Image (cartoon, rainbow, N blue to C red; front, side):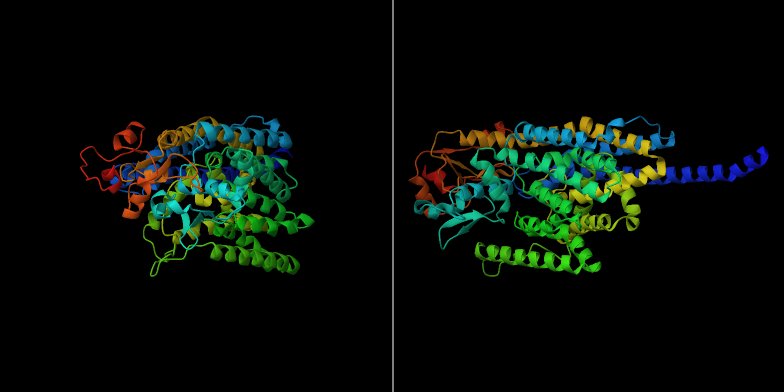
Length: 575
């Protein structure tokens, strides 16, 4: 009898061994692919860094994307590659585990994560990003917020300054010659959010607050998708809260954290179709369309809306369709009413059906997504994609949302320029994490829940202890000279500070003035001065000409000393 039992057990043991070998082989294949892709990215970053495109040069005003990639990603991608290789060793050694009892206390983990995120991002706003809007489109949100706080949509330029608008206008601000007024070029909801916080002088808290709100919404979404598993909800917030892109972008003045927050809230409402709150989702979508750029929410939401029609949920389809159509119409009318007319013959298209540069830029963007995610996320997303057609419809739609958002920008005409991680993808990070949670469930089924939890904890811990400090150092080092230079300029006691944007790399972004021109000193560009502008500025009072040497001492990237370019400024010659 015993021999019969033993014989019967042999095929089962052999089957289990084969299954285990197959599991290990599949995991190693994905991890090897991640390592090789990261290694290719390291080579690419080093190569770009050896070319003029990958180095700061005032003669090149549009290469910051390549400079940041060349500077930051060799080490950032090396962390990913080393973690993936270490995980391969862990898999080959049988995936030893450790007990993780705290995962069952999901609400405690959520509370701690949300508070920690709020604190980290608030401190980082000041200590890492120096509470400075690095890029022009960050600054414009505060520019427009100041206008809103005066009860206006556009700020009228004082008549005495009209002839000098070109040299005092911040980048990306729209000027309307017919009314001598200006405003931010973007849709207004994010600026309105900043106006609320700016009213109590707490605008630097907005994005940290939105980051904490995103975690709460993501937790609720994961609980709705997997009501039987509190662990999955903890996995979701753990992966997002340890993402360097999520945290660093929440320290900036970009609108992308607001896109992510509203999209996450939308997803939480949508994941409860049996509740009346479900019908609030398109109202949140209305705000999301008008945040900044409408395409961000449109790309995120499209697969979910198509699902309503595909499943013949006609009442839901009609309600969502009517609300979204009304929202699109209203925001379109807003845009048309407050848009600067294009110059005759100007090509305003931002898309190209064929753009050879994207064959290089898009792989770089994918590398940024991987390199700025929590370390455990790439493997989990790979596992989630591997069985996405067997997942719940909402998980399938989340994966399509990610693919649509990423794929759409292949037709965009340029790179993202400034940004930490891949900021064009930021609005759909909640979907990316949902896909990773599906991958965690797959890993738990393949290797055992305790092994999956051990891998997750190792990834989150190393992301916080190794990856995040590295990214904070990189960001602070890059932002510091721009923030310091701006602080020195605005602390001067003269009526005007004039600088030539060709003296220092990306110094055109330093041309920032109050929308009502109430700030002193007024910051003036010496590039593009006309005789009428010179006449206006000569009457404006004292002026300090910011020299190339001063910019160099403040850490800005300036032209080479042997550059003997003649001084083109009629204002400087007049003085």
